[in-house]
Image (tube, rainbow, N blue to C red; front, side):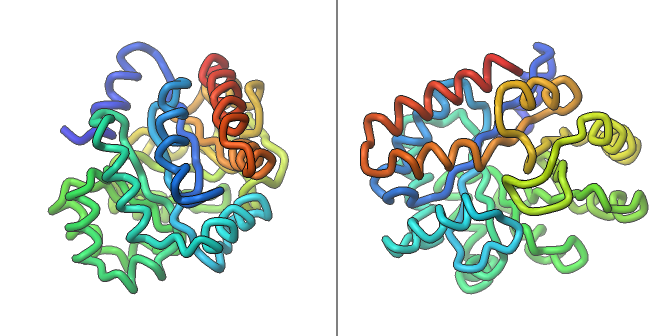
Length: 265
C-alpha cells in the first residue's frame, strides 16, 4: 500500500482530516528545506506538498511566485528537490511527500528518468498543474511503475463529464481548487465547495483535498469538516518570506501556525 493511501485510510478510520502544507523547495535557502519539512511534520502535518521552483508559475499568486524567485536565486532545481526528499527520508519513512509544480522541469528532466529517480528517493505523488489527463497517459503509466500517484486538479468550473475523465486518470487524492483564481486569492465559499465535493464524490472514492483559499484556522476548520484534506500554502510561505533571514524564528513561527491549523481541523 502506498504511503498516501495508508495515510488517508488511517485518518478516515479516526474521523480525521489530513493537513497538507505547501512549501517551495529551496525557499528561503536550499539548506533549510529539509528542516522546514520536519518542522511541519512535528507540528501536525500529515502530507507535505513540496513545490518545484519554476520561473512562470501561472496558477500561483504573488506570495508563491516570490517563493519561486527566492529559490531560483539559489539555482534550486528539480534535481535539488529530489535530493531534499532523499535527505528527508533518512529520518522520516512515514510522511507522504508530493511534488507540486509545472510540466516544463519534469519534461526537461525526462518522464521516465523522473519517475525512476523520484521513486528511488521516496516521492509518493506528483501534481503537475498544467498537465491535462488527456496528455498524461504515458507519464502516469511510468509513475505507476514506481508506485507514485498522479494527482490532478479539479476547478469550480470543471464540468461533471470532465470530472469523470480526471478521476479515472488520477490516484492518491484529488486536489479541488476552491476559488476561481490563483493561489492566495479569492473569497472562500464553503457551501459552494461542499456542493462541488458532493458532485465529485459521485464519480470517485478517491480522497479529496481542498486548497487555494485556506488562510487561517477558521477557514481550515470549515473546509476540514467537508473535505478529506486541507491544503495550506500562501499563509505558510508568507511566514517563510517574513523570516527568511532568521531561521530560528522561521521554524518557530511555522511550527506554531501549523499546529494551530492542525488543531483546528
